[in-house]
Every structure is written in structure tokens, then in C-alpha cells.
Amino acid sequence: MPAYAALRFHVTGLWRIVNPRLQLQLIQSQTEMQQLQRHSGTPVLRAYHGTAHARIPRIVQENFSMSARGQTDQGWFGSGLCFSQHADYVMFYYTVGQERVRPVTAGERGRLLQVDILPGRTHRMEKAEVGAACHPGYDSHVSPNAFVHVVFDPRHVLPRYIIDFEVRAAPGAALDGLYEHLGPAAGSQDSEQELDGQKEDEDVDKITAPAQPASKKM
Image (cartoon, rainbow, N blue to C red; front, side, top):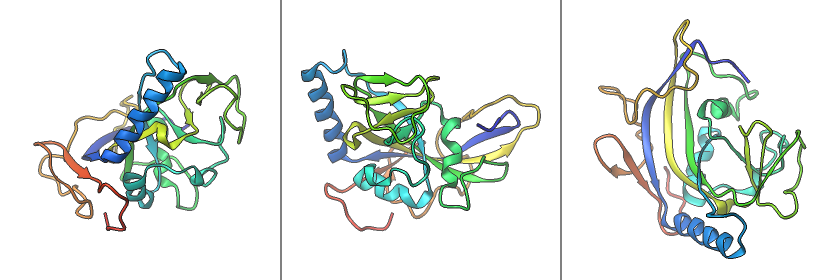
């Protein structure tokens, strides 16, 4: 994992995703887990996911898909959907679709998804098990250092925010993954014009997904 001590990560745009269908789906999944007593209180975790820019519109409309498994790697801790509660851990995955997944460097711009995940009953891995199926009796896996969460059911994931960021050099500054502010940078032209949405408040734009998936350009 690359060291980001000499980099700063500046948020240049922030959009709230509003997709009622996926919100209801997560609530129903949480209710099911409570009924099955899969986890006391079935907490929801806030996590991050890095992926290629072109994949994000479909995720916003239709959620994550298990059919995408293995496109980036075979799944070090299971063949599922991978997330982390540490934004800097997943940042380099926005380079997916380029020649290879690589560390981010100063001067680049990228995009992350912030999501809610419903881990349910979680199996803590003792070591990597590349491409493993979900362990029987569990809903998700977590890596030995708890940096990677692997979810095996898209219904247990809710996309919440799209975060645009810019990587800048900060020699000598130990600021791993530090986000200095939320919302578009003051006076910047960084708000992506290809993203629809009405103004939610002074700092956050809202993207409202239609009730049914559509082919509308994001």
C-alpha cells in the first residue's frame, strides 16, 4: 500500500445520492437480519469504494453487482464486493481501467464512492483466501487488520455520496487521506457538469435516482 505522507487530498466536489429503491432495499435487509438474529443491532458501517469513473453512474442507478467480481483482482479476502472504512486505502482503485491499478500521484484527480454497508455476521480472516466464497454462517468477511470489508450481497450496500478529489503535493506533511473540507472548492470550476442534480444546500449537491433504472446519461 503506497505511503501518502507527501500528499494532500482536497475534496473538489461532493454529491449526495438519493435512490429510494436502494434505501428501502437496505432497510429490508436490516430487518431480515434482525429477525434472523444475524447480528445484535445489525449496525451499518460507513465505508469507501474506489472504482473507474465510468462505472459510477450504473452503481448510482442500480447498485453494485456481483457480476463485477474479479475485474480488478480475484479478491484477496473473498470473492465479493470490497470496501474500506479508510478512504486513502481505496483511493488508488480509481485507476481501474488504465494500464494497471497503481498508486495515486500529485496532480491527479479522482472519484470515490462513500457507502453504507450492512456487515451482518462477520468472519474475521486470519490470512488471505484469494477468491474464497463467503464462510458458511456468515454474511461478510473482514481482513486481519480490519482494513478491508467484503460483502457478498449487493442488497447489503447503499451508495450514499460521490466524492471528487484532487491530489496535491505536500512535502514533509504526514496527512494520510486528509480531507480538508466538504463540498466544491471555493471559486473552483470542479463541479462535474455531466452530473445531474438539484442543489441540496450550500455545500452538497443531490443526485436523485429514478424509481426504476434508466439509460439517462449522468
